Image 1 (cartoon, one colour):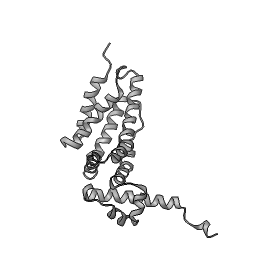
Image 2: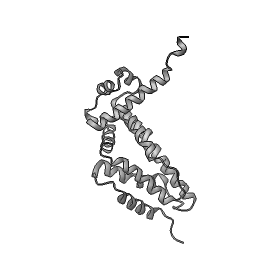
Image 3: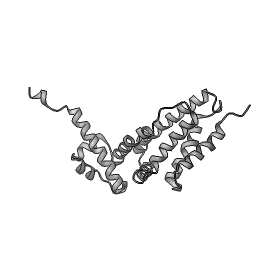
Image 4: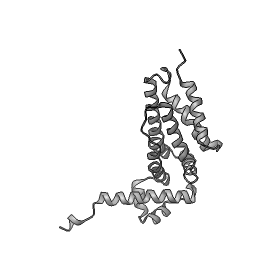
Length: 198
């Protein structure tokens, strides 16, 4: 009978995992990625370091998962059928996350760290970049089937044309990622993607 009232280990572990991710993201926002430590995360989350290392190989992996869970739901969207409007809304939502004062710089720091950590780079690519690109690629593919963009369009190149400038502004130029900029970007790219008249 005693065993029947014991807490479910999976639920207990999930609570610990959520606590770790929430603390990691909050501390990263407050202190910056460079000053964040596994020790600080463990202390704030009320777990041992061994618990963190059992689930993640590095500080970067913890923060990458925390950022993923914070941001991905905010940039997903359900297409309305209006191709240009949907594309604009998708890119606006991504730009909105990137320009957040606490979150945008943390994303940039993670990308920088990933240049020296192949495992972290793969986590970011698999967890963030690929899902966003696939959403965009599906959107472009539907537009291609509807004749709204050129039939010979390379969908991967088109996705790079749309997403690349956002990453360039976040990581290098630091120019503002405003809605006005996003709208101009979408219009400029679509001018190149639309089928020729007639």
